[in-house]
Image (cartoon, rainbow, N blue to C red):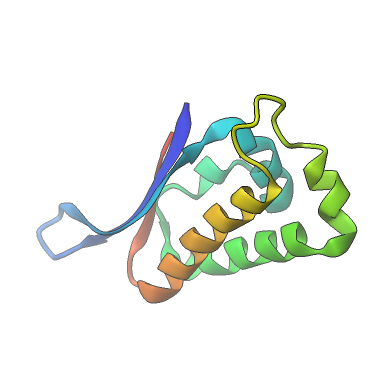
Length: 110
């Protein structure tokens, strides 16, 4: 199982079109994201980017805080699929995409 994030926009036809693919990443890091966000990453599905960006920025600040480093290291999956740094990078990529497309919507398939 994994998360696949894209930025979608309605071009006026009532149909959403992908304008940027953020990428796909393992759900093994879902616990980290849930802790940092205060809810599931999937809960941001269909959120307007202008609203999702500050939520993602807050999660990034929490995950990057040196005082939280060991907390997130302890959440790394034992199977080696992902780590705290890659979890931060994935959220950073989604955040940056939202900043580039404030009128878009965050599409999260998981």
